Length: 461
Image 1 (cartoon, helix red, strand yellow):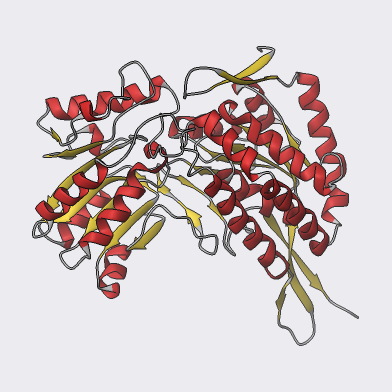
Image 2 (cartoon, one colour):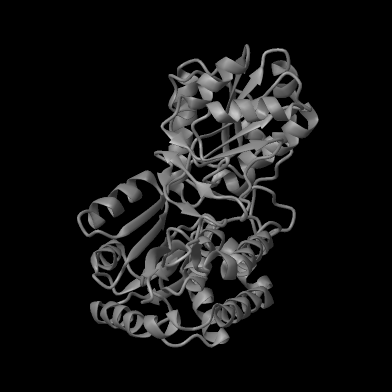
């Protein structure tokens, strides 16, 4: 393995930070420390666990300015938006802390003569493998509930955002967690595979690409340990005839281009009722043209670079192939002078005259491009929305809640939105279908995959 990990900023190619990679000895010691301390952590009261976790969140919030700048430097999100990451972390983290006492309590089973109950017990050590695109929001989904459930946690963060892993470590150290309860490790793919295979790891939570998820599942095959996978999507929006077009345009544009389109649940394809199509497309294009692409450290930048040139080139390739097959590009990229080939800086694009024969309407783009199609009715929209190997979220834009619910029942997706998109509510289960993954995080159901049930059947004589 290489001796160091370097973070190359997408802003200008500079090195943000370098850190030594964990050795085999470091990994072994971390696994042993987690195993040794887990029993005592499990026996720590839920209220005390909550106090530790709240203090860690407080520490992160106290360093919000520095952390926000680090997020921008590491992955290119405009600095005006980076502080929102910690606000989201606080919302999710504190919610899961607040419901823990009730959701982790024993489940009684009524009986006249027997004392029976189901106790939720921790799994042991949870390995969280977090991505770079929302480095705090994705990680907190597992870290806080895993700790609250009595597990010890190992965090393997993306090499692109290892400073976020350091911040988590500093926060839990500040809170006073015992050695080994929470640990971050800087490892490469080989080191990650070693962690997945380790007998000391009892559960793996992975957020990333489908390719990465396949590798995790193959590595864990036959080891009889749980694996949760959140693998992204090709999320659709359907704008019905009765939709508020102004509201739909404003929110779908934001849901599609925020974070330069690098959002697992970002909007990547839009279906509009034929009666509203031309009006919607005209307003959509007008709003997209207002983005300012540039250095994300500048306060007025609203669209930053993609994570690297390779990622931007994959989106350019989708756009070029779609246009060669008959799609029309509606944005003149020359109006975005910062956009350059062979760089992470990519102008936003809107494509019309697209079809499901094109990769841009089928494969995850994970970039600032959206295809828009006209549909004749709800049934055609449902067919198009379901015509994907992904199923993370879908949004329906309408004035009719009953119809939205009925359409939602017909869509194969983990979350159904009405008149909003690209949002994760910690009170609701975060799940995916098809190639968007499996498992369930957050909500009252989120504790189920981080604990195992133990039944007590007690009879007195």
